[in-house]
Amino acid sequence: MLRPDRTLTYLSIALLLLLVVGVFLPNWLVFLCTISMGKALVVLGLVLLMRTGLVSFGQGLYYCLGGYIVGIAGQYWGITDVALVFFIVMLSATLLSALLGLLLCRYREIFFAMLTMAFSMILFGILVKSQTLGSTDGFIIAPASLFGWHPAVETAGNWVFALAVLITLVVLLLMHRYFRSPMGYAGEAIRENEIRVEYLGVSPNRLIYIKYIVAAVLAAFGGALTALAAGHVDPEMAFWATSGEFVFIALLGGTLHVAAPLVGAFLFEVIRTVAFDLAPYTWQMILGGALLLIIFFLPKGLWSLLPKRREERL
Image (cartoon, rainbow, N blue to C red):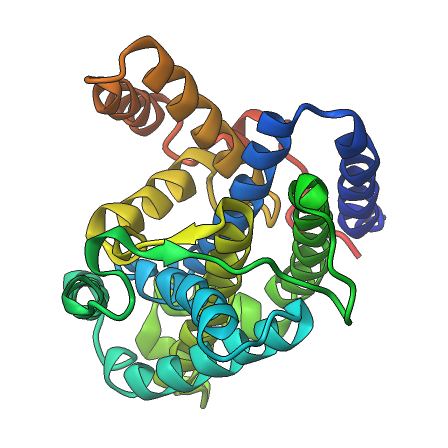
């Protein structure tokens, strides 16, 4: 008999335990964990696309969109409530991705990758030329609130960390259900043989369109969390190198499990922090070397090191 799937239980325990332990962690580690969770959300959406055989080099578009909406809402609209801001982020990412997805869902392979990067670079160019939004320097995020509660400046990092843990937990639980749903498995079928999926009466373009919108919303959430944690946004969030980081993290963690992006994002931030400390002028070489090792020896990512379990668990 197949054993029951305990992934949801394990994820809940791990993240809630992290929430409790976070009270005792130093500020730099809390910040590192918060940034890791923000990027993990972006990578989770990227993994959703990769399971259909598509690689996006333009997730920085929605990552930047989420961050800038947080900043614009506080600085120019006077909206600091996190719940309302995240609703605006979700709505904006959904509308933009729904529009762009009408075009992108028709393309595959390198054409999809290059088109996504092109749209991201368009946003980068607009922000760089915008003096109102700080041009290349960006601007500072206004202090956020939650249902009328304004946390003290010295505790801002901790409550953003708690918010990131809760959002990450909910997203991971929902995405785990999605990956195990018929629509989730259909993505892998599209990757293997798109024509046969059409013969079954399922539209690959429609499925990819939906997955693209979901990935966009996750990326916008990740950008919003990163903006809240860093307290600053700039056009580099939409630059192609930022989108490349997300692909790096996806390769580092792998696509075998819903928690793999979280592990990959944390290890990426640790490697980059240590590399920058050891070699501040050549730290990119260390990251490049780590990527080569992953590609050569662990093509399915770090998650493949764990003992293999049966593919189907009820």
